[in-house]
Image (cartoon, rainbow, N blue to C red; front, side, top):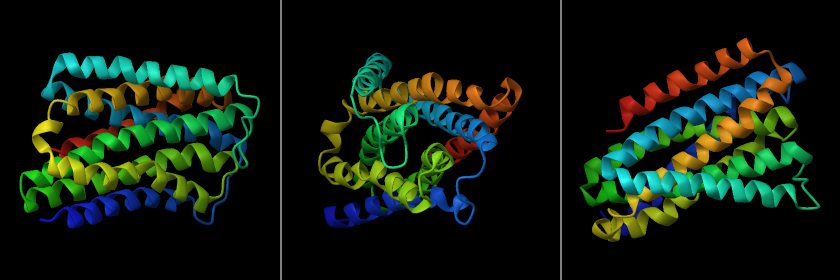
Length: 244
């Protein structure tokens, strides 16, 4: 397996993220009643990803994983404060708070993709067959992540193709990190739990501090809970089945 092939395969996992926008094709943004369940469903998906990331990080080193979690939370808190104090918070068709949430979500998913890219590269270091299995699993796993991004962007007025593009952009670190990870598997092993923990902490904060409160602004608590569970359970089951 050559580094070029590893990079191409990792690029395929990144492109798979854009498939998460497909459920919105032909449906448009929908009514305001869809905003609450959409945010809650996205939060459930992110909480499931957080749980899987945290479990994997702990397997590689509990202390470094916890350090990564705290660093991830701190990163998002600082980023949020910076966005709040900016004079202009418009992003495309998003305005104000919606723009801030969209930027935070894409930023956190992008950070998360560094860990996934490292996982793909390290897996290929263990052999071509194993690397392809892990890459396929991450590609499938990326589709719900693209859905989470689209669930936040599309109901607030972002075009489906734009949401798909931002989903792919959030996963572009995967091919960028996969190649060096493939070349330096041994050196990467000490950093991986920190990266995984960082992504877990950042995603958990955005889901709990941004998406769930936003969902409760539009929908009743019971509807939000049902939507969050509907996003959490299948996503967590998918990850536990596919990722060793």
